[in-house]
Image (cartoon, rainbow, N blue to C red; front, side):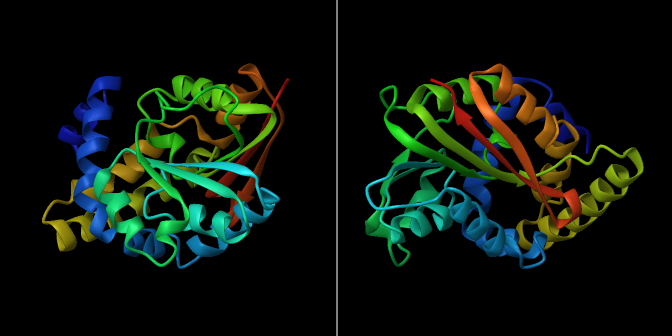
Amino acid sequence: MTGLSDALASEDGKARYVRGLFHTIAGRYDLITRVLSYGCDQRWKARLVELSQPRAGLRALDLATGTGDIAFALASRGCRVTALDLTLRMLQLAGGKPGGASVGLIAGDMMALPFPSNAFDLVTSGYGIRNVARIETAVAEIRRVLSPGGLLLSLDFDRPSNALVRAVYLAYLSAVGSVLGLTLHGDPDTYRYIAESIRRYRGADGVSALLARSGFAECRVIPLLGGLMAINVARRRD
């Protein structure tokens, strides 16, 4: 795993690695999220959507949209949705799904959002914040594009605070990721990235603390799967 660790050792290195990785796995993205979530991925995304209190006319931005699950769910509830992803192939796959024409699909970077300030009432993300090269920059951009009082919801893997639980969790993800990566792509490091990114992640509580320092209020964490996954919730202060 030395090569993977080296690739993630710097912000620039992580940005390059993530860009290449998600282009490689785009065609298997839906399969992998279902497998690694024990089939719970859709239920967790539905929970996030309900927490967002979607309504007709709500201006929503879904970041790291992948193949569009959250974006399409919001659009089906009447929201005016823009979906952004770093990977063009992900957006192509999203556009080919039923409902693909119901959202605006844009290729872009979470650390440099191509939108004016105060443009959205809601920002969502599924497995996004953990993957950016610099979380502080992404959070600042999210705050900028949210209108005062706007809501942020982010679903992601968590980093268990208990050292033993964390070690077992990461070992499991690394082992399963190795098998899946070797089987599907001929490279065991492909999905080992998930465990390695969690190892370096500040976790949902750390993200919540960062949000509180960065102009957000009502910051809370909703644990899922016994705390192995989580939804961060926060509201932009005026």
